[in-house]
Length: 461
Image 1 (cartoon, rainbow, N blue to C red):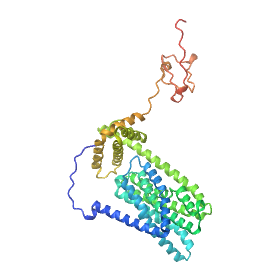
Image 2 (spheres, rainbow, N blue to C red):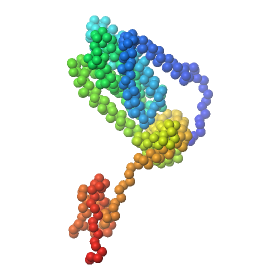
Image 3 (tube, helix red, strand yellow):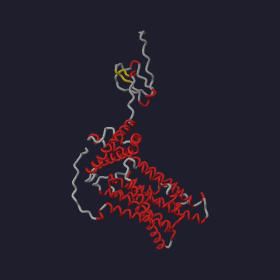
Image 4 (spheres, one colour):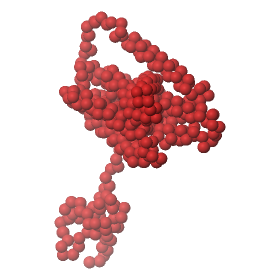
């Protein structure tokens, strides 16, 4: 049960300059900015200025769709935007720079060692590129897992972090491929649908915008399962992310090597592996999201008993439809600020539920009490706007009351009895004669229940 301990007194400790947050943030921003400038120069050098602008304009089209999809998955317990911005910047700048430099170096070294440039390109695309690119993207997931552990609660968080990182990486890679395709069309004079640019756009943006996110999501799932594992299982927490990374490399290698399977190898791999894998991962993520909602409904009643929440709130907070109705109600009665307050209230309540679950499993850490009190204080300050909206949402989404049994159906006291879709009560010499029997129609067939039998005429014997 939630408690209200006094604020702990922390002893004063001297912190070194590199342990200060602003120093770490400054170093990280500087690293990403320098990586962005270098990758910008490299891509522009390979594609030319016109090719870079065309590639940039076409590559940016799927980015809002992908970001919105992953943000939609994270609506139960939305993480802070700064984590998503970091992941996208890491994928677009740092991971892309590492991949370009490492892939170019490895391909040149293999070509020099084997004196076969064609084999070097094939080997680099199917072996070197998957290992380098997936490792570079997994570094962002690892950094969030280690330094933003408070925001990394399970499979959905791992999927979102990995997907946003891969979206940034695919954005930079699409600029490079589309810019080179545009340069090829400028040399050959191709235009329209028959051009290389149109074919590249169709394959990379229309058919497979989720390709890179699909690979890296496997790594994110490994980190997500590790986040759900008890703290005493150190070997499992180490092996699960590594297993996810190896699966991501294998799927990436299969995708890159599909061109070596013949003219229709790409379509065969796309239909036989990519589409089923995408459907399976989508189902897993949706199931994990429903699991998170069940966790909210199961953990919050403890805070109802302690007086922090009202009895209707766990039900409303455990339903995405009720949450949406609550925000709409707050916007209608309190404006945009009210809707933001309700959204903040929902996020804090969800964080409290996940924190309590981690505490029961022994994974909350030493700051459990302080973090719990911070979240409960935030709920208490927002209760004036959020509680009426959530209570309205709970009433609006409550299941309907059971259909009452009609008076004519009561008779002989054997409880509700269902006699098939026609509900004919027993008659004849074997009919029960007890005065309290009940013939209630089954709810599924209630609309088809027969009319009540006619009553006898009062003047007839």
